Image 1: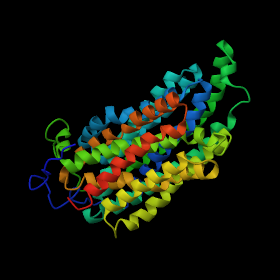
Image 2: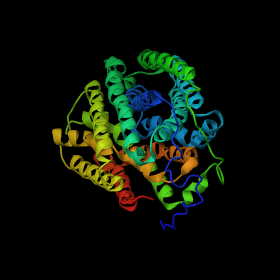
Image 3: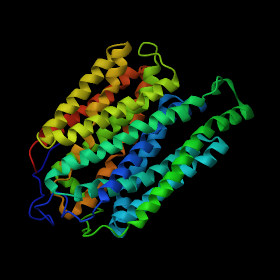
Image 4: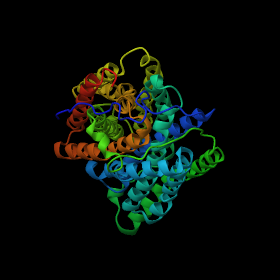
Length: 430
């Protein structure tokens, strides 16, 4: 697309700061890291329940990807209202509102299981994701404000490492709790009351897992509420235009928003297909639970890369690092799609390492010089996370039409190609 000159200059409320003036809040970073851990882990559980629901409701890949579609559509619907809410009630109270909404979403799995209705599971996931969106609107700009703007790239990458710690651990335990109980029979062999009973029984494991999460979320919300007045110096500007959409006129921010859309779509598409991909006879031929546990390697690579990246990004151009990571992801996708056995399986899992620095680096590169409009920018970028709804659904359609998961990986590869271009475009400071 054609790029106009960047209009972010002296019109910014605080042109010398990328994210606005740092706020004073001793010890608050620990709470923010915990938020990253929680919403990261809950998001990665989708990769575990997709194969479970796919079997129980006899779904094709497109239908199974509705899990991600409903989850990430919340970013499109809630992103801007979530930013408005945070600006009205503040970061800490916004975090509490998000955590309680997440708790409600977890509790909605109870009626979904009791009625054995796929649509109710999708609705519960949408409510759960709505809370995640609000928490993420809080966490991303807040971690940038808790320190000097010059190290925002590194600090957000380090915080994202805790997000990856959650995405690494949750699928492992989720595979044991959720996939480990699959019965010997198949839903395709049943019908009528017997099928409903089977689905209710098997989805009860999902209820137990998310019920436990509901309790944990209530406790964390209570802890954050106790410290709701600790944040000092918090301020927000009123957005120009429609809820900050005018920010998309800035080439750097607009291109970055597109890349957030594509990155999340590519990352979620790959994570959603890992279990099915590794179960293929010509790849690793694993059982469902064993394949599910390996999801942790995908997200674990992202965790390792983010801890390392938080140091690397202090020494090298963030844009150049981003371009190299995207090129690495494309290479691994090509290797996986054109090989078999362990090479095919583990090259796919290694893409997690390439993903590691992408989201925080795109986010901070896009948000440079937003000043006091950081909350607006965060809201728009959270809307862009709805790429996790669109790209996986399209990937599932390609898999169903082509009959090949390897061919379906072409879509994530195209996403990474655009991201590599953004890294080159934004290699110099705004």
